[in-house]
Image (cartoon, rainbow, N blue to C red; front, side, top):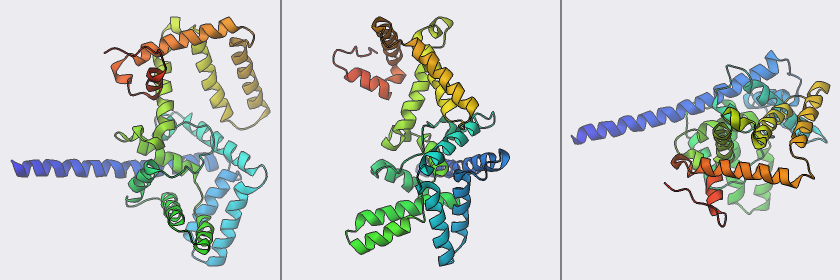
Length: 315
């Protein structure tokens, strides 16, 4: 009997390890598919996003100091000049939005991630450290994933020293390992979709986005509910987020203007009673949604129950 228990424990441990390794592999595959689709299939090879990716691949394949220095300088200029950071962010949003609209991509974990802007380097805390520990312990990481791990390692070294000369050298070294938006989001998506990781701080944005989609599906599913103004607002905001992820063309700009006009028409600034009615309808739907036992841990429901005078769900 003890041997059976030990064997069962070992099998579970192996299964968990294999699942984690599979997640990392999926993140790598998804990243490669997105770059192939955007940079090759849709002919955006000249975009900053694709050029920077190409430069990084070249950087990781060369050991010659002068060539590495030149590549690092080129990568920095791709996102460091006036206006280039904004363009890079727009390209990233456009690439991810277009990729995730493909039928074969819609079910990928990456596509459940919020797509608002270029991810900024997060302030390192225990949840971020845990995610990198999970990632960097795996074998057969892609070159881009290895770059993320090296970046985290250098950041740790910077935090561990107060020596000015060492910090200066480490910050120079950090330039070799830039933040990679597609790779970072793909890794985060897989990590946050595994076990209870969704409850960690690094996954908060993903958690809130998924909960919002659950709420919309619940509150606006019936024909009667879809006629409510707050449901119409949610649909339009989804359309606006998709439109904001598209490239800036005369057609896409016009589409965004049209959606914004429809949104403004739903909530006239001077009609306070209409705005109050929308707030009441949403509040009632939120209370019904949060009264479900399975939703108690939801971020939006926890906030509801902390509001003075709020009705706590009875179970």
